Length: 195
Image (tube, rainbow, N blue to C red; front, side, top):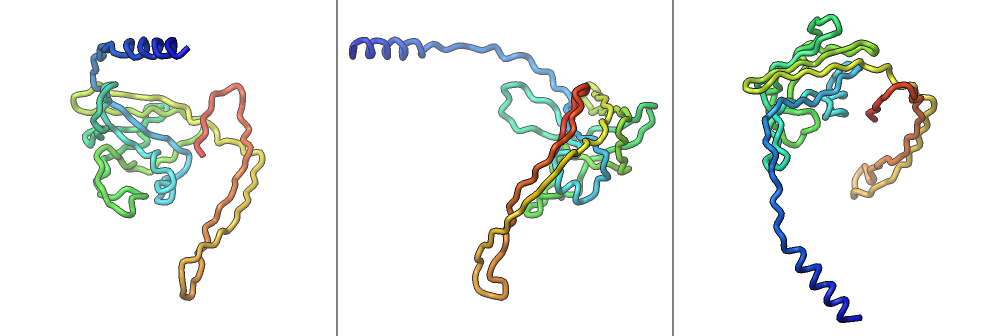
């Protein structure tokens, strides 16, 4: 039995020595956008709570690229309604501060700010168009869905004191809890929810 296990192990180790060359597919850089159109006005609190929903523009990378994603600050981006009217324009965010980055101010090329503060209307169709030097233009069309119908919701919270030391405020409370809700999801449509 020991000889069989030893022989099997040697065969497995010998078979692992082959080098397999994988052809790397050719890559043509393309414009890449990340944006969430919302039916809520975008203020400081919204940006702080939903950092990943602002417009980010970059160039695509090869499948095997090991370099970090580089944003582009030279794109022209606009949002149009169904009639073709420009309802929102974006400009590169060069303020040096991103909401939520309170401990380090950074200018990260690729982030853009909405200039008009347009709020999307449920049921309306929108087209996001973008172009940048050296890359093919890009556009995406979406019909903004109706707000989700919340059928039931409940919440419960528990305060957990943490002792921080002497003084007038001997304890700081962290609150932990559970939020439960039920959303009516129409079966006839394909919807996505951001919580």
